[in-house]
Amino acid sequence: MARPFSEVTSLPLPLLRDNVDTDQIIPSREMKSTGKTGLADGLFAGWRYIGTSGREPDPAFVLNDPRYAHSAVILAGRNFGCGSSREHAVWALAEYGFRAVIAESFAPIFAGNCVRNGIVPVVLDAAAIAAIAGSGGPITIRLAEQDVSLADGRRWTFAIDAEAKAMLLDGLDAIDLTLRQAERIAAWQGQDRAARPWIYLEKPA
Amino acid sequence: MAAAGRKVADPARVFAVTDHIVDTRPGRTDQTLMPGGQAFITETRAATLAAGIRLFDVTDPDQGIVHVISPELGIVLPGATLIAPDSHTCTQGAFGALAWGIGSSEAEHAMATGTLRLKKPGTMRVTFAGVLPAMVTPKDMALALIARHGAGGGAGHAVEFAGEAVRALDMEGRMTLCNMATEFAAMTGMIAPDEKTFAWLAGRRYAPSGPQWEAALAQWRMLASDPDARFDREIGIDAGALAPMVSWGTSPEQSAPIDGCVPPDAPQRVLDYIGLASGVQLKGTAIDAAFIGSCTNSRLSDLRQAASLLQGRRIAQGLKAICVPGSSQVKREAEAEGLDRIFIEAGFEWRESGCSMCFYAGGESFAPGARVVSTTNRNFESRQGPNVKTHIASPATVAASALAGCLADPREIA
Ligand code: SF4
Image 1: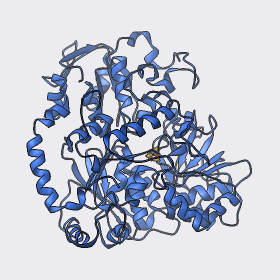
Image 2 (image 1 turned 135 degrees about the horizontal axis):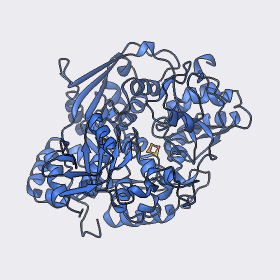
Image 3 (image 1 turned 180 degrees about the horizontal axis):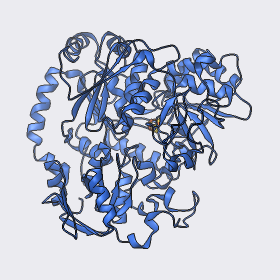
Image 4 (image 1 turned 90 degrees about the horizontal axis):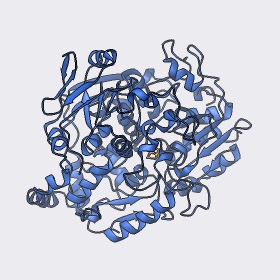
C-alpha cells in the first residue's frame, strides 16, 4: 500500500533535462536485491557519485546541493522516466523521499509506476516549468485541486486521470480495487473463453 | 504476492523466463556476474514451481529473450492481450496482438486478477510508403521515425505501423520495427496480421491447431483496421528515401543517416558524453567494440544479414565483437546453417542466448568509456557499461562497422 497523497510543499529539485531515463534514475548495477527497498542510495548513482563504484558525492550534481537536501519534488523536462520499465526507479525515488515529479511529459510505464507508489506525476508546460525554476522558491502541489502554486500566487492546474487521482489520494491498492469486481471479470472471461478457447491455455506444457 | 497472501489467478496463462540476468558466456550455469543474480534465478525457480508457472530456465532448450521466445513458441497470437514487466513487450505487437510493457506492481495486478486497469490510449498510424532500398532495414525505419518525430513523439498513443514497406517486411523485421515503439514513447506498436503472420504461427507449440486453428484464422482475418479507419494522428514516411541510420547521441532520437554528421545544434552535455563534436562526419568514427544481439535484432534473419557481410572477412584488429543469439532456438538454427563459423572466423565471440550486453545484463560490460556500435535499442549513458558510448544501428551497419573498425556504411561493403 502506497502513502496517501494530499499536498506537498517543497523547494523543487531542478533536473531540467529531457529524456531522463530509468537507467539514470537507478542504474541496473544498483538493483542488488529482489525487493523494493535499499534503493535510495543508488538513486541517480551515475550522476550523483564520482566514478562508477565509489560513493564520493559529485558536487556538480544538483542532488548533492545542500539547498535541495529536503526536496520532495523533482522539476524536469520532456519524456521523464523513459527507457526500461524497471519499477525500481520509482521505488528509489519514493524511498529517497520524493512525492512528486513535475515534467513536460512522462514515459507511460513510468507514470503508471508512480501512481502505484504514491508519487504524483504532474504534467505542466514548458513555460510553467521555466517560471517555477526561475522563481527559485518553494511550490505547493495539491492533488485534490490538481494545482501547483508558488508563494507569490502564481498557479497552474494539471490534468490527471480520475482513477489515478483516487488511488493516489487514498493510497489505494489497485489489486483490492479490482478484486471487488471478481464476479464481472469471471463472467467476461467465461464468454471470451467460449469465443476464443485458444487464448485460455490449459496447463503448463 | 506471497507476502500479501495473493495467488496467481490462472498460472496456465503466465510464463516466466530467464533472460536479463543470465550469463551468456559459453558453458554457463546459474552463476552470473550480476550482483544478486544467482539468488534471483534460484528464487524465481522456487516461486514459479510453487505457483505452477512454466519457467523457461537457464538450460531449457526454449530459453531466450522473452520477446524472442514468446513468438517462437506461439504464445503471442493475433488479437491476444499480452503484457510483461519489460518495456520492449511491444515487439510482439508485430502479430496484431495488444502487447505492452508494464511495471512490477502492474504485473502483480495482472497475475492476481487476470486483468489490468488501463486508460485507453490515443491512436496513431505511421505509414511507410514505397520500397526499402538495399541494406536499409526495419531498424533504420524505427530510428528514422524517432529521429524525425522525437523520442516522445508517440506519447499517449498506440501506434499501428502500416504501408507498403511494412507489409513487405517478414515477421522478424516487423518485430524489430514494433520493438522500438517504446523508444518512441508509444504505449505499443502493432501491425495488422496477414497471411505472413498466420503462416509464421502455424504449428507453433502454444498456437491453436486443428479445428481451433480454423476458427482462430476466421477471427484473425477480421482484425485488420478498416481501409477508412480514422486515427487521432497520422505520420507518413517515404521508405524509399531512407538510408542506414546510426545514433550520435544518448537518446535514440539523436540519430542520423550514416553518411550524415553530428548536427550543429547538438546539446553540449550530450557531446561531452559521447566525445564527438558538432559537424563531424559519423562515418569513419573509430570504434572499440561491436555488439549484435538484443530483442531488437537477434533473430535468425538479423544474424544472416550480418553474416552475409562478414563471410570470408575479418573484423578490424583489436576490436571486441560479440554476437548473442536472441534465443537458444535461434542459436541452434544459426549453427545448423553454419552462421556461428562465419561469426567466429570473422573474429566475433559466439554466445549463449540472453540479453547480455544490451544493458550489461549478466553483470558483464564493455570497458569503461569504450565506443560501441550495437544492434540494441538504447544508447543511454552507461547502459552498456560505465561511460560506454553506444551507437545504435542495424545488424548490417554493425557488421560493416566491425569490419572497418569505424562507423561504416553497409551499402559500400555489400
Ligand atoms: S535485450 Fe535488452 S532491451 Fe531487450 S529485453 Fe533484454 S535488456 Fe531489454
